[in-house]
Amino acid sequence: MKDLTLFPGEEIIDNSKWRVDNFSFNNFAKQDARLALEEKYFPIVEISDDYNRKSVSYQLSKKDCLHKWLKYKEGFSADLVNKLLDEFGIIPGNTILDPFLGSGTTSIVCQMKGINSIGYDILPTSAVAIKAKENVFNYDIDEITTLVHELNQIEVPQSFDKKYRYVSVTEGAYPEITEKEIVYYSEWIDNSHYSDIIKNLVKLSILNALEQVSYTAKDGQYLRWDYRSKKMIEAKAEREANGRKPFVVRLDKGELPSLKHVLIKELQDVLSDIIYIQKKTKRQKATIKFEQGSVLYKLPLVPSNSINGVITSPPYCNRYDYTRTYALELNYLGLSAKEIATLRQALLSCTVENKSKLDCLKDYYSNIGRLSDYNKIVCIIKSNAALQEVISALKLRDANGDINNKGILRMVEGYFTELAFLYFEIYRVCQPGSKVAFVNDNVRYAGEVVPVDFISTELATQIGFTPIKIYTLKQQKGNSSQQMKKFGRVALRKSITVWEKNNVSG
Image (tube, rainbow, N blue to C red; front, side):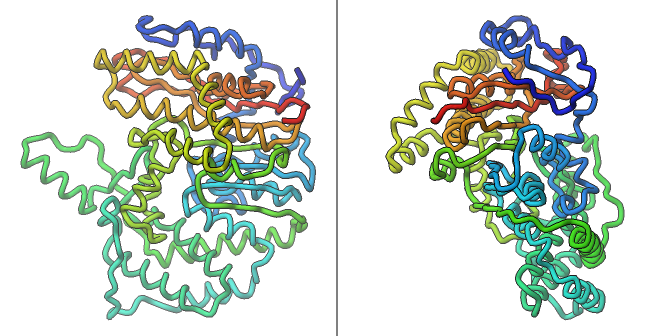
């Protein structure tokens, strides 16, 4: 096994604290298969002080030139991508895949280094973001300067009365004056003489401003609402009418800024980044190929042995619903409630509302003449002892009344099922010797620990990958307060799993 470390020269930390010795609270369910995985893969676990939450999250990107253009809490840092590219020996002209492009960090870092990339994402926000960022060398500084100056001079006419078109989940998200601003300035830029790439850049800046000017705040599984919003006022009245206690936690965002104020600030920051990059960074010859849609149906069409590596972070198996947390942005981009619901089902199964995609995948693989591969992947899933143990354990917990939403069982099974299809396709499209990095979190439901890092690594091994290293954050994750009250606390790993395609054709 090759030695790989992101942080050469550092003292290796004793990693025994990160080892799990009890996967099922009070030994309620079988855990032999999970314990066996812990024994099998823990020797390649490495913890480092240098590797922290900031590097595998959006935190470092908040101030990063270019990467901060779209606030994307689920992303990882450019610093992490750079380290992985260097460790993987990726050179200009190579091609990197990011199956869950998000805000485009992997692709943009690759572009700056002369490395080609392919990316997929089902969210239309990704399409806007990657188009804006990849054009960083093509923007006319004078054109943006003129736009900002013109924007400073215009105001929403008092007679302007067009309404903002909400969907139910976003109804009342903005003060009335802000609703008019969003509609007016969006129409103004759409009907302007500015270039298409500038119009898209403004669209991204508006997307990045929406949460700031709204009564909402992103909070994992959903949007939190300010106490002044219509939704909260009505909810409070309903609770009082039913004799229920008032909400314990109250969101107060203070005075909300105008869209114009935030938009000008966003564009000024973007302009500053563009000026800096165009002056200080040498333009590299690299292509970014982005396709909007599910990677489950896009990647099977990519030629075999055409990719040199993968750096990505899938949605975590944590019930977070991207279509709700990014509802403001999806609504602004024109999606209807029905389209948002359809998008939710297309997500990698990470919400309790997701339904099984197996029948659709079977039809798809049959239509492209690869039904044998579908059957092979299903066999791999069924023969993964730890995964089947987790599914059985959760069913026992459900029968015992420990699971508060039956959708959790379907979600966990669907999550790994879909990842198995993805891992299989990644193995196929990667060239021999290519390395693959996945950032992910372990989770716990109803007292049952789900070792996402080790189950994924076992699935990858069954497919043909060689596990190289599992980097783990020094800072571990906790559990929900509800779980800890009933099942105690178990520290959970947040990991980067690194695998290599064997140096044979396949």
